[in-house]
Length: 163
Image: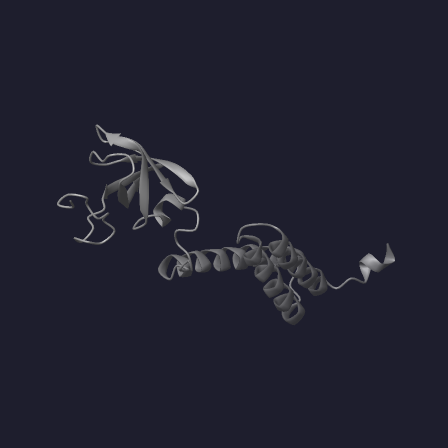
C-alpha cells in the first residue's frame, strides 16, 4: 500500500474525470459529463493550489453544481433542434399522404390502406375504394378528408352518351 501514499491527489481527480467522461459515452443521458468536467477542474485546481481533501471535495461539489446548472440554463435558452422532429411519430409523418378507403367511412369512422398498413380513420362519409388525404392525427387514428380531384384527373371515362 506504499503506492497509495505516493499517489498525488490531482492525478486521482483527473483519472476520475476521464472515467466519468468514458462512462458518459457508454450510458444514456447527459449527466456524467458535468461531473467529469467538475472532477477535471478539481484536478487542475488541486495541482496548482494543493488544497486539503475537504477543500478538494468542496471544490468538486461546487464545480459540479456550476457546470450542471450552467448547462441546464444554456440548453433551456438554446435547445438542440432535431434533424427529424417527427421521427417517433409515425402518424404525424403521414399527414398529406393519400390513402384508399378499404372500409367505408360511415358515421365518421372507417379504415384506409396506406402503404402496406391499414389505419383507423375519422372523417366525413366516404365510400370504399375512394381516395382520401390524411389531414391530421388523433392518437393512433388518422383524420382524413375526401380527395377532391380536378375534373378529368384520375377519373374513369364514363360510358354515358356512348352508343
